Image 1 (cartoon, rainbow, N blue to C red):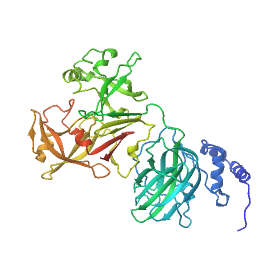
Image 2: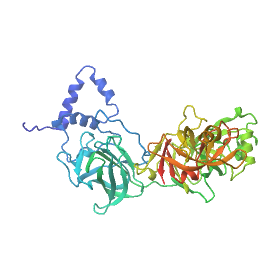
Image 3: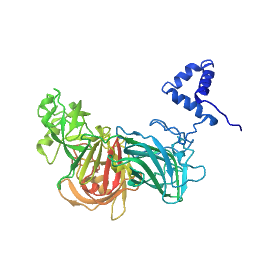
Length: 505
């Protein structure tokens, strides 16, 4: 075939003239490309024709909003990663090299916005390396794996300032559930680099490294301000008790008052007893009729963390405020409903500390998705004992006999123990009971989280068994719930954007 010489701009003009000459096409074209730039339109027209394609060594760098063309199959797997930090945008790549490649499966295929092409090299330790146009702070890398829906690839990500000395920033595995881009947050949000290297150590089928698409995201400077708050639990604490300030009706901010940050709270965040007079109520709130409890728009600050957070607050009834008078801190604290702020912050609970980060800050605990165990999202579900967001299905098992029963369980960060119903759970399982009070017994039960993405359970965990005629938490029907050391000694709990995941300790 003879060589075709052309001018891209002239040819594009001819194509556009032909399109606009067709009846009705002007309006249609304008609507379709209303949000596109002229350069994008021209590129898409020209790239559709193979002999007019871009001949540069690297394809045009995609914008952060563009998506590669995809084959017509393989569903996208749910992501376990957090959203990117603010200011984290797609890096421009100036060159690519690799340890080797197989035939037409060359390195530049990983930035051509096409899931049907790939870079491939055979052998443990095969790598592909990207040089960025500028040295920035690497905050995220997205990788799409060839045959990523049928096998998992073991890999590491390393970065370098000079291209010779590399520092490993991530070691992980692909999910094995999708052929599309998977997000990997880079934990060190203050590490600047000009070179990014992905090293592949085989997959579950063979020793090939095969990547279809890569996207690197960075930011020019690290986040500033108080974007992360670490609350260290004392030796006697088993819950996250943090001071907050509440905006009062007159527009001023209250003095700090300690609140219990609880995933198990069904009702909106308490208007604490200290705030009642500022809201125009006496010490008994709305009085003795709980049906008169009132929900109001509220705003809080978390002491030690930047930002203000909108959330509903509730003026409670006399019985509720009697609890604070009968059981003052450190026994009982006002509850903050964690679900109401999880679109603005992430929270990581361990048995030693709780870390709260603004949504702009990466969550390093999510970096290695191969270790994460996803739980059902925080949401209201049909048939649950309360209207809270924390419920999931579990199996309670007698460790001695193996007998099992399925029931609802509420994973609550605001509790310091695991509580089981006596008559409908413990007695059915024939758990051995040691009475500790008129309502409660000590026992042990294995708890299997059957809705988890991977096997997860608490073996022979200490539990408190409660008579179902007694009060559970702050009232309501009998239920299984709790958290505290028995849970956090086995798993770290990660919450973000209404998602939940466990990380084995």
